[in-house]
Length: 222
Length: 217
Image (cartoon, rainbow over all chains, first blue to last red; front, side, top):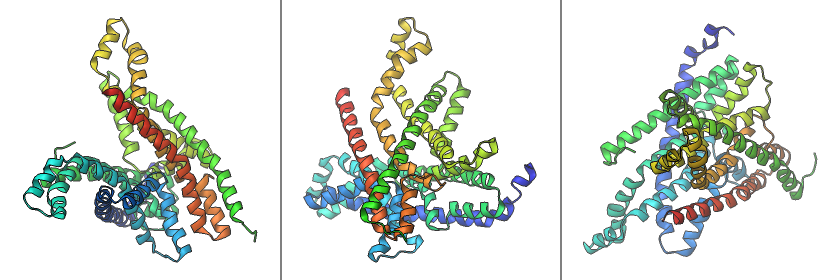
């Protein structure tokens, strides 16, 4: 194998790699926003005192956490059309990623909510804030601050897991790698380059999240 | 076309599950073996070896498992080994597991009070024997819960080997689905089987965790 030839395809592949990277980052950004929102609702629901609601949420969390993401993705993309719900690949991927991430972050957010001392809630109520406002303005910000490092890890893990959505033809980074290696016949070299890009993405994403936490949320670096 | 009854679908899926279980066991045992070596490097007195182990762990924890499997699948033949899904899957998951297990055990070693090392030293034990007789046995015990937790993650991860062509549960499901056109049932059952494998272990990990918390009080 010629060392010059092994990576000769790389300059011509930069557009595909860039577009795949952009899609991967878009997927994780959307998933993070939706997943965290879902888990705030779910964690609050678990603590609402409504038995049935709490049971349904717990069942959702356990089912997702004890089955593979790839199976969840296939169930949503291939399985749901069987009962008349047809989704395009991108929507199916975002739905699967959101449901998966939401299950893990529900546990994290829940632990954060439990960590806020009850005195905070009582003090806010004593000031005449409505219960919804107590939650949004007093409890949630403190909980988020506590769980921010754990949330970051989950975001990075989800970004790495998102590689499998290539299997339903979402044109993210891994999909582009699959296409490239079929064209260049340099499978190992192609996947090596893309693996290193993922490594850089996970390091970069983690740094960015820590930076945002420190600047915007006054979270101490983990 | 062959007619598949519901029982045929279930029977074939349950039958294919043995490969999922076998691969999980091989990867867990292989990962524990390689992971123990990585752990020794990670807590070595030599900074260069520690750095090497940290780089190894960061590499496997910072890249998608799917990429690691692809690199095994296409990389092993370059080392003169045959392209074979089982070999690539077993090696890929072993290295993946070794990085995670080494990191889990490292947290256990870190949790040991220095007094434990000192006590070993005062008995005239060298560093190796301090590790073998005093530190590691305790570190393994206090990290049982995260170890079982990781086993759950590993079992779920075996589904990815279907992509490189290993005939485990999910790949069998894909084939059955292509024959029956009943994806809702087929993938539903696959999820159910994975749940049946993983959930008891999750509960066990939780019990170990609770016992650990109680023991520390």
